[in-house]
Length: 226
Image (cartoon, rainbow, N blue to C red):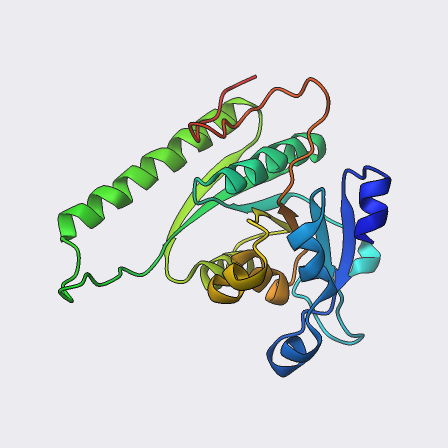
């Protein structure tokens, strides 16, 4: 699959996933997860559902709805590349975007004291401002955008946001770590892929068209109206 994607210079790879977890995942792994780690282009993973089970969405026979896109951002380069893709998709299909940032649980210092409350609140306010700036610029570019700030573990918060809010598609970045780095840190994108009920588009190796002018700057994390 990956060899063909490279040979064809593909813009997108679409794979199905059964969402294995637990022992089945440990023993068999996931083809979709292996693909997103090394694919030379974005990967769209669509989870299959056994007959007779409900996805909580529309019957597949009624057609595919793509009106609401959830985009988790941590302001890293890969998450901003994913947001850039999300903007292009949203413009093409007339969808709205919900930006999600997850504040991870506060870690303890070496002296086992919590960071000062004022510093934590300053961080929270800084994140709010960056999200608001992105939302304002994207809305000005013709993409209706709202923001959500959550706390908790990133994968759990992303999955809960997708379940509790209207989400037809999750678009997120992935570092594509392998080997020891992947074993130690895991991958938020892969955890989301394993459990999400809606399709997940992961962006590791951006492929934009010739002459593409970025809407979201990877250097500053800000968006510009074009």
